[in-house]
Image (cartoon, rainbow, N blue to C red; front, side, top):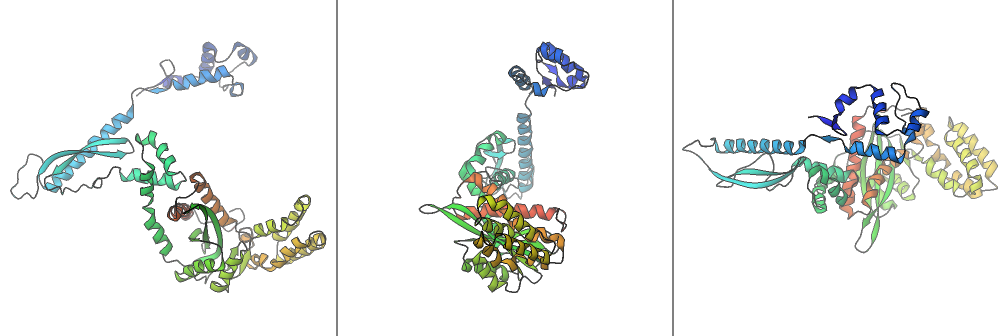
Length: 443
């Protein structure tokens, strides 16, 4: 199979030539104007002047690129080969089912051949029109594909992967047309996505191992269609770092709000399933009132750490824009101090400098100051950058929003849980297959 270039010249011979030949071809074909040829004296090995692109050069390049063509089309041949392979396999299965090959006789036969019927099967190579052997009793079981199946399992996995990667059902159906050669309806992709419901139920009900040294709790807000209007759905999420340093999205819980009752129900379910928090040294939160109420009931003995990123935004909201850079630098001196003593000294300097100008900002910082410095009680100073904020779980939320943004509004709560489960499963799989994370600032 030869790959041709332009006006019938084989590209293999052209590639084996010296770079100077291509420059001569540019001059001869008029890609490079005489002015450019005189202005730039080319030597062997000199690359093309990509920074000198002109409309004429671009149009000529596009024509040459369009001239690339394969001698013959491999896809019909591959489709025909796959069709013959599957039909031969079906014949073998029929022979194994009957116990005799074609044109053979036996006295103790339990069934007989009854011709063929045409079945369409959608594969990665496109739609295949197969001749499927049929038995008189209609009990011939094929292991290649399920009865009445219109698609092979690999195509279903591709469709499900497109859905999980953030494509809406309509976009996934249109994107796969050039690959599959046949359009799959959006309702078909929705039916395939419903297969995730059982996986979601198992994910919510599985037994949890009490293996997390640090826990992070937070909520993410997404949109879902309601009976009358679009509603905001809140997902309460749990993230953990294991004793070996691996990251894991533990579970999520759809709730009507972030109230103390909702957080208590979620945390109590985690506790009953095995997450009792015995080895946990610290729990990082965004400072929500409902979350802290639930933690005081379910995990009252665990050290709490308020997120410095959320607190910094809350303090800066009470400061004039012109003074925000200076106040932010003062806050960073507290959060990035080497130890608790230096952080406390930095706080008193900030208080003395800005207490009169912005008393509400200083009061906001003072109110939760002890819990803002809880991470200093962890002996490993290399972990401070990861424990003083909830950025680890917020990073997972960014991945959720990136996947759900192209879909717009979710059809219902079940559809919302499917895509969130798919995203969290993908993240957990990547984290489990990656090397153990070192507890350093660079990691």
